[in-house]
Image 1 (cartoon, rainbow, N blue to C red):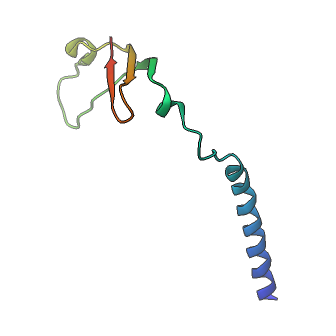
Image 2 (cartoon, rainbow, N blue to C red):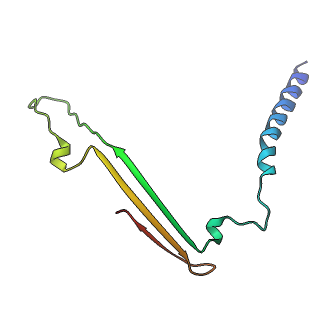
Image 3 (cartoon, helix red, strand yellow):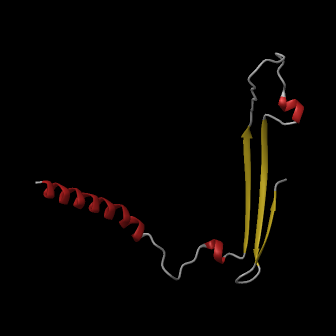
Length: 103
């Protein structure tokens, strides 16, 4: 009986693995297809990044009960948004020039 249960569990797990791998194998690319990143001569990417920051520092012991505003002291804003710009020029089959900027 124990051997039958082990075989059943093995067959069920093998069936589940095969069913999860089948869609992946079916969508595989043909050998002659290449990704646009490898074949496009020029590429341009524009992005933005927004973040909020807030930090606190604590120390054990006794000291003055005075809070220090690190945002003001260090010149850091609570909110920060930055942009990015990337340009790529594929010069040859093996070489490309990149430019990246955070204005």
